Length: 421
Length: 140
Image 1 (cartoon, helix red, strand yellow):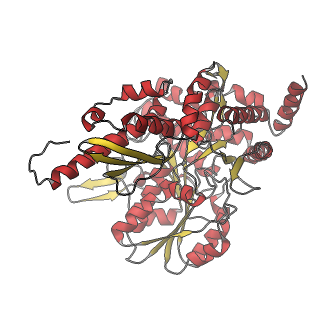
Image 2 (cartoon, rainbow over the protein chains, first blue to last red; image 1 turned 45 degrees about the vertical axis):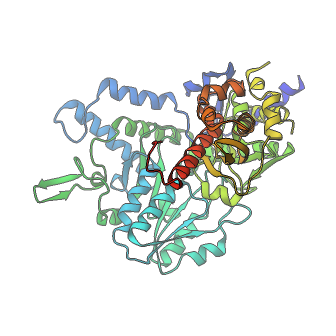
Image 3 (cartoon, each protein chain N blue to C red; image 1 turned 90 degrees about the vertical axis):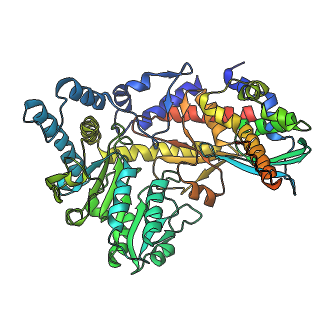
């Protein structure tokens, strides 16, 4: 009885920023049972769940006005075009961009970063440098690394310290006059570290380098304003911020996008095509070749509406409270190692249990209906630095509760019992 | 018994905590490394082969309980056996040997050691064929 009372009390304190119970009702999947237990979804850094408002927007497009955009002179095409463009405007406003010309829809963060790696390195010369950090996701390493190989560029990495933060000295030493591009994650998908992007952007600017920010883990969880962080480009994915898969965003400053070469060529990105040459369409369509994922774009617009309705400030506070609670509870269990900074972090906690592989942790938690991520999190170089094969990772979002974290803790105790550690 | 407890039954955990044939062999006839990027499971297999018979085998690995215990059991199973016989080992046999229900994702963990073994033998036979200066190609 005492236990129930404690849970209820914790549950209330987690809901003070907004009514989590009514938010949970918007997410049909949260009604689901897994292995006959209520689903506890703690894998939000991989992908978030979708509210019915987003699902309805997609279904409504297919049911009521499915048509290609920018093409047909008919009612349905006009409606589809309008909604798809409106989604660009919503995203522009959401991140403080100067209108939809600065918002390119891609399929995900990875494609956004590939577009940049391809297009921005075209004008670079042999020996020019690209600076990344040691905590990057593969998607912010591999495109640069491969293009650098093709074009004879050098790639340097800003080091991380023992706390899992970027080393201040390494930041200022890595970025020099030779640096042409700096590309860094805003928030780590493994360590939860929130990087001082504003300061890194400033140093990049002082050295006339372009600043690219991977916002895949930050844009869904906090107010990100491109002007205040001072970046030139920002890449993020729709599916981690309540939107559907298959839609991502690349923000770029208009004057830079205008000068850049497209990454994909074809329909919709052109203004006039002759057999011997082509003039490109105006922004952002110059970068959106072919029929795009119209439904997903409209779905992302609905996701932005949903996040705005709740407020990014409140979502950040809720994230912080859940993360602090989880770290406190994890610390109370012996034999659990937590990676990353102790404070001021994103809603991601990576951990390991002594002598138990993260996949075994995840499998046992799954039997309790609890979904977490286990593995290298697409950060093999970082895993090598941490000297682990992988980690278990729990990550939260606005529909999670302290009660669910209590279930996670019980699950971890079960793992320890099964393995006798 | 719950499914999950069945999966991590005593047998599996014993092999995981104290794997048989664990270690490295210097001057092995063949040494091969396989990696499962999904889990990060790793197996290094060292085999000493004489007259097409496995005289000694050891493995060194890091990974989940399923991958490591299966390597432990498989090395027990093949020691002293003929290559011809070993080449016939099927997935089904491995699953039977492990004797627990596995999800599709975990199958990869369970079968990593068998993949490593089969590739080791291919490499060994390719090497032997080349060195016998025999132009006959058995094909892999």
